[in-house]
Length: 181
Ligand code: HQG
Image (cartoon, rainbow, N blue to C red):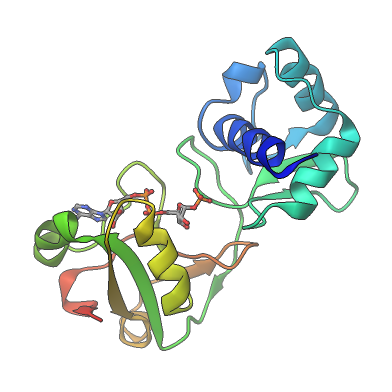
């Protein structure tokens, strides 16, 4: 597939596997998995046909490894970013001392007043390095990077999880753990 087709297919899969499975007439199980056969049938019925080989190519070449197959290759899910209810079964882990969050100026006052909230997603998404956070912020405009005192949050009992593609997930970040980079 050419790069544009790859991005287009990835966006459609994000829609189906994170937000609106019904557009491809599939349902996610409790952990977000869908049978590959059902997904391919559903994509075809939705007018977005994809071969099994193309699906494998999207999973393998996706810039953020957004999707993963199950060990037996028969199921697929999004690694993070859901708005539909799923439990990814990720174990709680000790985070690095500092994590980063990329956002934009216009959200800063609210974030510094009430902390980071998951908004429409299940978790607040934090980046392991500043460069990644900058890229996340740039999606919305001139980026601003906040640091999160993850070591102190962890010591205070907050649970951190890491998605299969390296995004750190936490329920929320109160303002006292935030600082401007
Ligand atoms: C902001 C992409 C006001 C927050 C990226 C963000 C990431 C607040 C926006 C992943 C707030 C939510 C997630 C508060 C947070 N008041 N604004 N209290 N708390 N915000 O898209 O972190 O391409 O849900 O700063 O690379 O931008 O989808 O979160 O700007 O990994 O794979 O509310 O999405 O990955 O936006 O991005 P999002 P995010 P994918």
